[in-house]
Structure formats: structure tokens, C-alpha cells
Image (cartoon, helix red, strand yellow):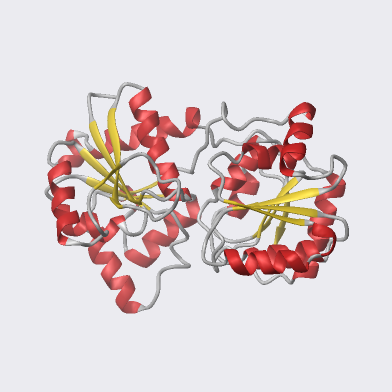
Amino acid sequence: MAARRILVVVTSTARRGAEIEGVALADWWAAHGIEAQAVALAASSGDHPLPIDTLGPGPRRPTTLAALRRRAAGVDLVLAYGSATLPACSLALGRAVPWVYRSIGDPAAWCGGRVRRWRTTALLRRSRGVVALWPGGSEAVGRLYRMPAEQRWVIPNARDHARFSRVTGAERTAARAQLGVAADAPVVAYLGSLSDDKRPLLTVDAVAASPGVHLLVAGEGPLLAEVAVAAARVPDGRVHVLGELTDVRSVYAAADAVVLTSRTEGMPGVLIEAAMSGLPVVAADVGAIGWMFDQGLRGELVPPGAAPADIARSIERVLTDRPSPIGVPFGWDTVGPQWTQVVDEVLSPARRA
């Protein structure tokens, strides 16, 4: 790759999937000799913010957009990583600085009505293109927002194989002792935001209908209090609400499977981490998750509208069969070079012309 200067823009300093992924990409580029830095449009109110610069008080505030213009003036390419960064980069940069938008969710689930689609199309036309998470997401961008194929790319999310690897028996025993779970109990884990879109209460209800199964809940969000109340109703203290963790590896080490019952998703990083940790999953068939099963994820897909009893039966089958994931192609060693190729293509003389 020729010498490039890249600015990765994320929505906030919150430790959410898109922000973590954008910062990790900037770090991967920097570790491979490419000048890259991640910045946030606004700060987070969380207790453990990401250690990156903040541009202003809010994603669309005039001072934030002015700061974004100043930071972008010294780079070759801006990568707008996530939904709130789309209007920010479109308004602040227009076509003056090359920028690419990273679609982090399911375009078909968030397209909205005609006015919203028209507005999103107008914003995207100022970019050099869109990077979707999986082929179906790219096709939706083309269909809904009339983005031509030559301005669309597909790159999945990634995780570090060195950080998430198959758990040993000793690690499992130590993690369970640390988290207060019996060594011989069947254990599933929920990791992520405790929000309506993720439906953590559905996961709690499904585990309540699975006799003897324990659930580890790692995350925070607007439903935290409701999740705690629902957990207290499950007999025998089988639901353990852990709150937000800066390091979730102990949760994967203690679990036998991961459960994700979201209403909508892009490509959940927790499922990549689960697969790298050698864990099967029970997940709603939304967004890129079905495609991830084609790539090596193992476990069971459940319909988006599945009832707790149906999810409970899937959990019990997965805990009985213990299917082992195939080597998934979501490591930075595979995904990082794909991003580099897109940057080279976008900044090539032919594409500039």
C-alpha cells in the first residue's frame, strides 16, 4: 500500500460494537505501517470510554462538524464508521475530502419510509462508496439507495485471534470460580447492550424455561434494571447479571454456548468471539447471522419471532450436541488486508478521475 493517511470516525467513545471495531481497524493499520487514527464525534457517558480524541459535544453540532473538517484536511481518506457518522461526514466533508461509509447494520431493517430513503441516498452520494458487512447487506444498499456495484464492497467484522482463542479446561475452571458458577453446571452467555433491539429479556425468559441452565449476562444499557428484576425471578439464582466488563474473555471461558436473540443485527462481534473461543451459538436469524453460519459458525438459528420455549429447546439441543465451530475467516489477518485493498482502490488515479 502506498503511503496513506486515514482518519476513522466513530460515533462516540462508548464501548459498543461499531466503535470498538473502528478503533481496532485504525490500530491494525497503524501496526502495519499505515498512518491511521480513530476519533469520536462525541463523548460517551459510560464508565469505561474508549481512549480516543473527541471532536465535539454531539454528532451534528456545528463545532463538531468544524472540528471534523479540520482533522480531515490533513488526511487522504476518511472512513465514516457507523450510522451517525454518515450525516456528519456528508455535511462536514461533502466531496472535498474522499470518504467511505461503513454500514454497520442491516440496511433493509433500517431503511425507513420513502423520505428517509431519499435522505440517506442524498447523503451517500457524497461518499466514494459503501462497505457492507455481508453480500446481502451490499445488495440491499444497491437496491434501496441506488448505490452502483462499483461503489460497494463487502468486508466482514473482525476480531484478534490472539485475544480470542479456544478455552482450555484450566481456563474454564478458573473462570467459573471467578464468576461464581458451579464447575459442572450447563452455562450459556449473553454479551452486549441491554437494549430493546437486542431483546435480553427474551434470553432470560428462554433460560428460565431451560431447567438447570445458568445464564451469564455481560453488558449494560437501558434495560439493565428490568433484566435484573427478571433475573431475580428465575429459580435457584441461575441468571448472573455481571454488568459492563472491560474484558469479557472470562465470560467466554466460563460458558458452554452463547445466546443472541436480537430483533435486528448487522454482524455481531460477540458471535465472532464465541466462534474463536470454540463455542456454539443460539442466535436469531437476522442480518448477517445466517451468512456467518455459512462461514463456519455452528449451533442453531432460531426464527426472529421465536418464543422462549422454542429458544429453550434450541439451547438444550446445543448444550447436548456441543457442535464445534469451523475455523471462521473473521481474523484481522484476513480482514485487515481487505480494507487496505479498498483504500488503494478508492484512492487510485483511475477512481479519482
